[in-house]
Length: 132
Image (cartoon, rainbow, N blue to C red; front, side, top):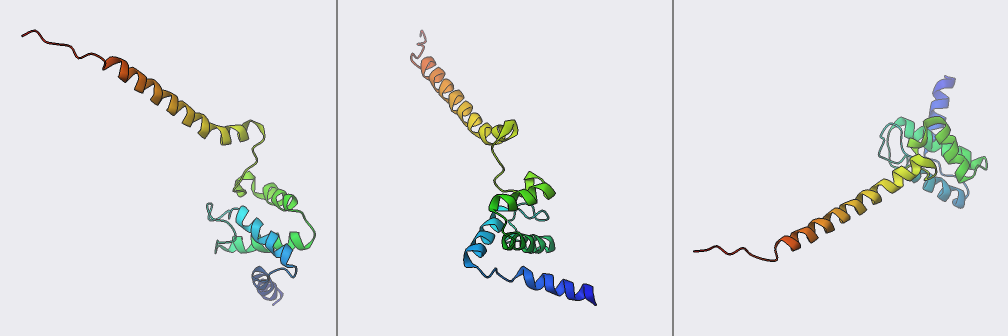
């Protein structure tokens, strides 16, 4: 009976906003930044997976206990890894590679395109004539 009551309490708390509108706004913003570990490409704010409901409750509990946004993110990273964040940190070699590689590939593609365009212009200057 106690387990059933606890389950109803948790389900009720998942949809209960925080009393302070500023704290609820922070909770909603964090719910959009934290990835559902079951759905993978969906924030916990939009996921209907049971674990996403638990994650929403945890976010609200941490904020109600006075945790900062950084502390909430750190709490989830410590349990699920950096994968849980939609915006992983850009520090360290892995961060530089993650954020810099797309731009490096774009720059390389533009350089190759320019080289091929110049090479094509040099070869098309004269049209060879045939002796009749």
